[in-house]
Length: 264
Image 1 (cartoon, rainbow, N blue to C red):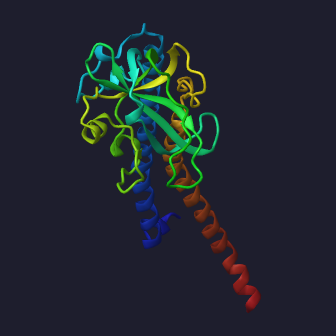
Image 2 (tube, one colour; image 1 turned 180 degrees about the vertical axis):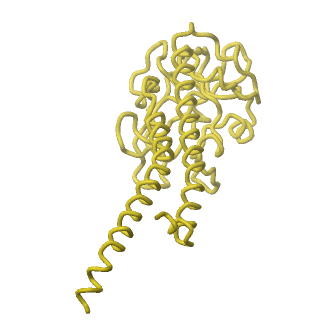
């Protein structure tokens, strides 16, 4: 009754099913790992934002990389803005919107003389064309104390943004302290500060970046369960398909004599 299972067609079907099952199981674990990474990131952000603020230069030094477990930590810095070396980051989305503009990054010369901290002061609209420097509110003059979130230097590997050259003056694709230290010859601490507040408060200023969402775990766990369900349903579907074909062949054999008599 099930001799048809030895046919070439059924051998190919069985082989495809046997290949798909481990692939789907692996895809499920891939989504599970993405879920675990998302949960770990959310927990890190939550802990960092709740932690007491610390001085930026207590967690970073010139040329150093910000460790992953320190990102998003609330940090402070006191000094004066170096408006002469201010620059913008192209192709960034408006906070809470969809418009594409620029991030404004201004170095802050630390009052203790330990170097400069790159401060992402927020988002501004683009200029009149792709090459024009946008209209940027001037940073506060005099000594200020800024509070914000510690971020690691952006790289192509971490951001997925290709860092191409040939851009207009003072326009870049990535916020990178090593790149700015090389371009300006200044001593720049690793990483940067994503501005939250300033004392004294600034008047006209770029649009501040919102606190990162650390409550959404995403759909990855649901996708993992779906892939595992698909893997489990494949052999079930194979059995159902085989039983259906066996019934159809049995029905054909049962109807064959009657058809032969009718034709005679």
